[in-house]
Image 1 (cartoon, rainbow, N blue to C red):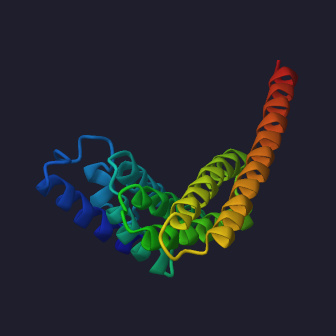
Image 2 (cartoon, rainbow, N blue to C red):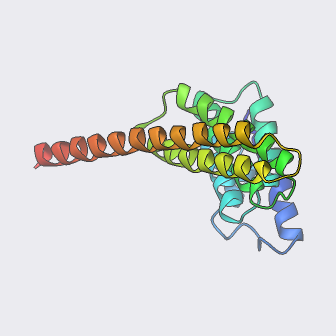
Length: 196
């Protein structure tokens, strides 16, 4: 796993540098020691993915995610992170996609990736973040359905019903994230008080 991730990190960093998006490794993505280390930690892969996300490069992130996911030696933490990052990258790609059919397909794949991530029972903070992003994704899917209903020859009634289902699911997802967030804050405060 570590050799594969190191090779991917080196390729991506070189590509970023060639595009003028990264000057050396001094931007805090990956240190030179981590790249040359034979036992590069998994956190480097996660940091690389975060850096790609921060720089708005979802297409490159998807490429890296495919390679990390295909690596049979990837640890459970990285595998879990792959599902979350894949969903987020797919959602980011939809923002520049003009074809509504392709956009709908990307959103569908992103929803499946978020569901896979949520099924893996992530930490509460990540679960809340995933639920919030999934709610936004469901709203986007509803909007796509509404836009498609305006096209000539479209089954407007069916597409409006589909949009309603997406909007209702978004509301339910938002409620779930709000409940989790509220209970998480209460528990965090209780733990803080107990530590005093």
